[in-house]
Amino acid sequence: MKASLDEAMGKLDPVVMAVDVGTSGCKITVVDRAGNVRRSGSTPYAHTTHSDPNGIVEQKPDDWLNAFVEAAAGVLQDLEEQIAAVVLSGMMQCLVLVNEAGVALRDSMQYNDSRAKEEAAELEARAGGAEQLARRLRNWKGPVSFPAKIKWLATHEPHVLEQTATLLLGSHDYIALKLCGICVADAVTASTTGLLGQDGEYSFDVLCELLSDLKIDIKTILPKIIGGQQIVGHVQTDAATTLGLRLQGVPVIHGSGDLGTTTRHRSRNLRCTLCIHRHIRLDCRDTSTASSWNNERPPWNVCVRASN
Image 1: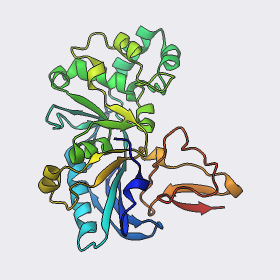
Image 2: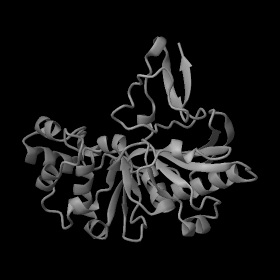
Image 3: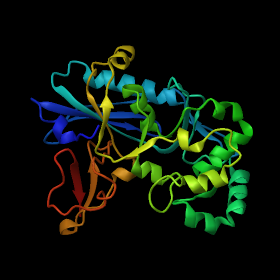
Image 4: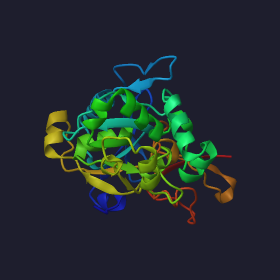
């Protein structure tokens, strides 16, 4: 559904719920059209990040969801204004496997999970070397890249991979799935995974060549890539009821991943960060234009904090 945040804001006294599914907790800020903060809150995750010396770094996706629910309930309590949209941002490069019912099949393999060293070396050898592979896959980063992690799963947890309906790419992807039942990824997050070619699309020819021994079709499990200002769905009634949140029917905008929401505005030599409240950074623009603005002023929904 191609609709924008401006359309969602065309209502009486609307506010936006900005969500950052971050590294240690979920942070939420409610802002009005002028960028004024009406409410804010955060909830830490129930479990700390699991890591070990072998390179394993994992989090529990349902910890993200539970923290979101708790933080959202807090900012919604006694809120009189109408929520015009839920805008999501979060950690990038979180490999989350979900089944047909949208249930996470294992803990998320985080962006800095580097266990797949042997698998990365094997893929690089198959491609003719690391440099050759980096020319074919955008942002190939060895063992932390998704193809290496998928190869690790195929070797060590094939039963989990065989149950996978969709492979999500970021923490906010998981919240979008739980709210409106859709599996998508923003272009900035997708570009960090090592799954794309130099054209910015999934490089299925290279992936199928590298992962030819998979028992599943890689083409069927990757989420649709979208721009960062698109309404991807609405909070489903069942989801709102189950989560206990007064958000049914509210548009959900899948924003850019966390790092991609910080940019530089060079007008008048100011260094600007796109942010809503000090903890929340959101980019509701397509990634092709996120790095600069031709206009003097950014869109209404982005609060610009500038410093010399």
